[in-house]
Length: 387
Ligand SMILES: NC(=O)c1ccc[n+]([C@@H]2O[C@H](COP(=O)([O-])OP(=O)(O)OC[C@H]3O[C@@H](n4cnc5c(N)ncnc54)[C@H](O)[C@@H]3O)[C@@H](O)[C@H]2O)c1
Ligand SMILES: O=C(O)CC[C@@H](O)C(=O)O
Image (cartoon, rainbow, N blue to C red; front, side, top):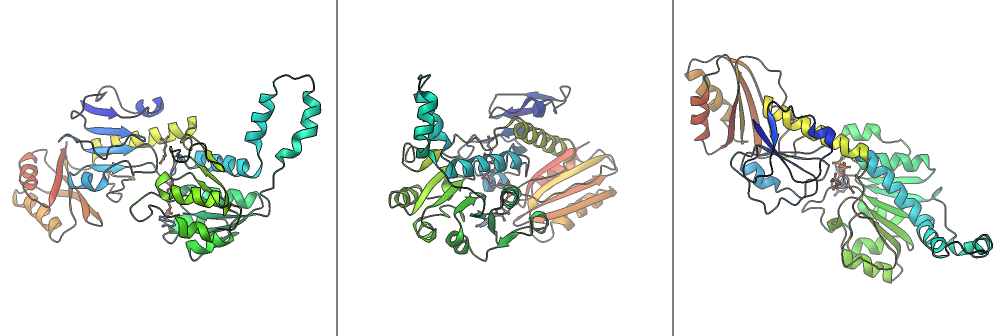
């Protein structure tokens, strides 16, 4: 039996992926083979020696200590794109809420209750809630990954001018982007030209406080900043100062904090970007399938600390080695196997940065001794045998 521990509410469709004959769910810390998580913070968590993988049912992995996981031979997965449409739709709501004051207008009408002169007061006072149109305004999109692309393309459909910035854009992403999206050479160029700026980059040590006082100063007077990516990307004190100085008109964010609560110009949403039935199901199913293929076949799809490594099963056993990306590892692993007179049926090795992963299919199930010897190597972080 393999033990799966869920640290957040995971959609039923995802949990149903795990066959009951070979998987059980546990709440016991330290007993798990794999963890399924959404936003729970694992950064200070101790991991049991048996933990082989963590899957984030979502895009951001800043709640997972990925470097520590790699050192312990734990593969960290996420579910790229699985909730992108849900976020795109909420960004649209954010754009509409910041161009048309519908939220205060609804609050006002609710405050009137069923007053007899309701219709009359509506027509008399509605001019307090005049807005502007998105059509013709410029949207700056920072980060053109799964979400940024959808937001940029949607804005083109809304007849907005769109300017995008992503120095690391993938070729695949570039193909999906509307040709009407203008390419900005720098973050500064986006900030200077946009009426609305929306951020869609991961939170990493490099992107922390991406938008701070000096970036906010570049923004057009009266512009709106939308942050559906992570709170730490925007320096809150600087945003509050920019709002107070009327440098920017609004800050719409999916990441509330005590400092932002109740402040003029701030719209707080309780981290609902991915909270649709469809996105929760997509993420849960994708995360579960990634874990199952890794636990049962050693295959890796959508890990953040290793590249994709997928090989058809052959032979009688599979050795799965998570190791450092240093010279001679492949020669060492294959040499150890051939020294025992064992035939290698198939082998696949891929690396990403400091780490690498090797799958070896062999023609005998009797490879535990080889695995035990390989585990002695300091460069080898985890060896699993799958028969
Ligand atoms: N509000 C929510 O519920 C919610 C849901 C999903 C994702 N998110 C957040 O949104 C982020 C983006 O999600 P995604 O699915 O689009 O991820 P993604 O990996 O598909 O795209 C991220 C893009 O950011 C780009 N990028 C990285 N650093 C950059 C920089 N300094 N400047 C400009 N671009 C940069 C990358 O090249 C990549 O194209 C996630 O990391 C997560 O933090 C939030
Ligand atoms: O699980 C959620 O509700 C949020 C997920 C979101 O923050 C993500 O990074 O994908």
